[in-house]
Every structure is written in structure tokens, then in C-alpha cells.
Image (cartoon, rainbow over all chains, first blue to last red; front, side, top):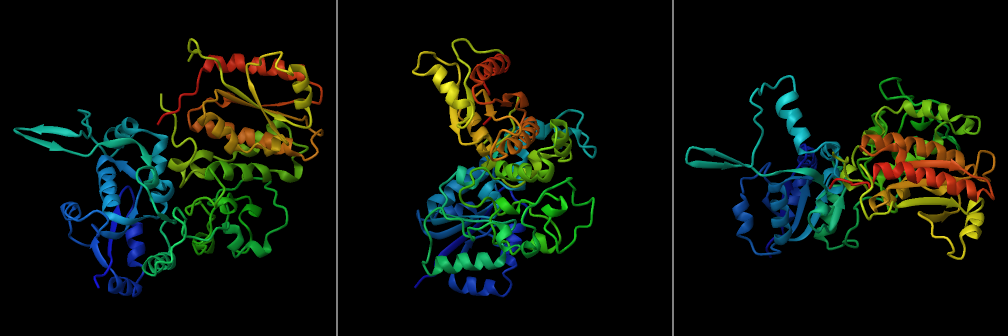
Length: 326
Length: 137
């Protein structure tokens, strides 16, 4: 019997998701034994035309990482969608927008202005910016259009499953691959990670006090956090309460707070807003009745970049999706 | 941005069920008076999460006001939570280039529906100067 065909593709991403597949280590041999990898730009020399030549639905599953930033990415994922039985949004960027999604605090013009003109290492006195078409003698050179707004994969094509994480841990990749091969798949649209918050599985939860009150916000570089204590108890913003577990607590174990790469737990519509909500609730909780509005403002002013912090991974999938441009 | 011709400001007021809302209902019931704003009754202003405020904006609200109980008058201390949330959401909205004044939190005791109506009118006057919130796509 022919082995099921699998494709890997990348969009607006850093390459870490490709690395995560490599991190399967010896397990990747089991994957290769069970499936035919027919497309994987980072590792294999197959072309878009090879995909175009395939029948619709011929690929059993496409694992697609990265957010959608350009016209080319949009075309490729639409093509892969047509040719695939299943599409798995692989990693934070495809799932909720990820770090590339932070570009939604700007738009094409402001990004081009910064990247191709203002950056100190760039000299561009003529103000030449990327164009979709450039005439060179008789030849016309083209580039894909750079969209104003970064979108999640699910905002561009129909997605069957979401494998969260920056990057997804090898164990959850193996679990997903095994579930697909054995046909033991959950309901369409499921996020393939436990539906509980990170705090539920956090190694520091045992020592966490019943009630947490943040007297003063601290940034991770300002103190050396006690590796036994809950970050929130120490005044360091940690998005654990609103974030899905399943990451293996990699950041926590490296003594860094959660930044939300696994996205929200079920029932949370806007990861950033919910995070903002719980932080505000425990901010100065002990003395909240005695505080004046100025006192509260003083505490809040210590949060240098709330939008960037609360929406670090989820801006494109949030309610507002992007900054309002004039 | 000025108010667009032929367009009425869309203002949402989240109103606490246990203080100002009953009086407000009595004063406008039964539809004798057309209000220029819509009220959504909540069980406590502390229950109005930032997600609800943002959702109101994505559904076309020009401004959102939370009408909560004054300090010491809320049985759940939800008003203190609401105050902190509103101040933090205002700071966050600025980064989204949305005028923070589009969100307001005001305190009203039971029976202060007149005060509420006046506050909302003042709020509307200010919001009309900003006009509709045109979010980018």
C-alpha cells in the first residue's frame, strides 16, 4: 500500500518550526518510515509545480507553519489546501499569528519606511522600496505583494487542526502524527494540546499562595526570580493563567515567565484582553480599596508596553487584529 | 473626526443590575423616552471584562461606558477591579491608536439615574467629536 503523502510548508516564520521537526531526532525515522514527505522547502528540492501537478486531496496532510504576510504565501496555502485531505496549522504563527503578527502595530508603508530607509545600517537616498513589478530593459521582474496586515492561517484557509507552540514540542508533534496515522483524530478545529491552563501544570503551582497581590510590577531583567516562586507572586507578569498548557513548561523551567505562545485556553476569545484582565485584577489587590486613581495609574505605568506584552503571540487572532492606521 | 451626517453615535453603557439600572429602567420605561445610548445590564461592573469592551468596538460602538457602584458600595469589590482594568485598557488602546477616552468608568449609586443620564450625555458629546471608530483591516 502506498504510504500517505505529507507536506511541510513555511510562511511568515523564523524557521524554528522546521527545527522542531528536526528535533524529533530518531523519531523522524519512524515518521519517514510511515509517510512519504513529498514537499518540504527547507530540506527537499520539490517545487510548486510538483504540487500543482498533483490531484486534489492527494496529500494526506499538510503541516503549515508561519503567519500569512505575502501574496505568495496566500497562494501557496490555498494550493496546499486544495491538494490536502487535512491541514494542520503548525506552531504559534500559523495558529494565532505569533511574533510576525506583532507587525500589525504597523502597516506596509511604515514597515518599508523603517526597514528600507530609516534603519541606520541602510543607505537608500533615492527611497527605493520593494515593488510588485520592476521593468528591467525588456524584462519585467515581479515580487509577491506584501500585505498590510498579517493573518493567521485559519483566517486565510480552512484549517483542520492546530498544533500550538513556539515551536511545538517534539512530543506533541509525534502525538499529532501518530493520531493522524492511526486515524484517531478529535473533532475538526481542535487545538492539539491539553485544554487546561499552564498554571495547572506549572511546577511552581504547589508553592503558589491562595491569593496573589502584585504590589509592584517587575520586568524579568530587573530581578533574579526565585526559581521556586510563582512569577506573579514576585510581580513579574506571566501569562500562564490564560494560556494553554502542553509546552512542557520550557520557559518556566528556564526561569522565564510565560509569554503565551500556546495561545488561549478554550472559552477565551481574546488572549491579550483576558491576560490584561487578570493582571489588572491582582494588581495591588491587597490595598485596592485604599488606592486612589493616581495610585492605580502609578502601578499600571510600570507596564511599559501592555499591548506588546499581552498580545505578544496573538495579535492577528485578537478582536482588534491590528493597530488602527491613519 | 466629526460625526458623519445621518449617523447617530453608537454608545454602549454597561449598567450594574444592583444599583443604577433599576432606577434607569423606571425612568425610561415603557419606551416613553428614546435614549441615545444602549444599555447592557451586568451583574457587576467587575464582570465586564476587557473582551466585552473590545467586542463592542469591533461591532461598531463609538464609545463604551461602565456604570458601576461607587467605592464601598459594591458588594463584590468588582468596582475596584473595573477601575484597574479600565485604566489598563485605556493605556493598551492608545497603542492601538484608539482614543482612550472612548472608554469611561463612572460611579453611580442607587437612584442616581439622572446623574447617569447627564454623565452619558457628556460622554456622548465628547465621543461625537471623535466620530465612529474606523478600525483598519
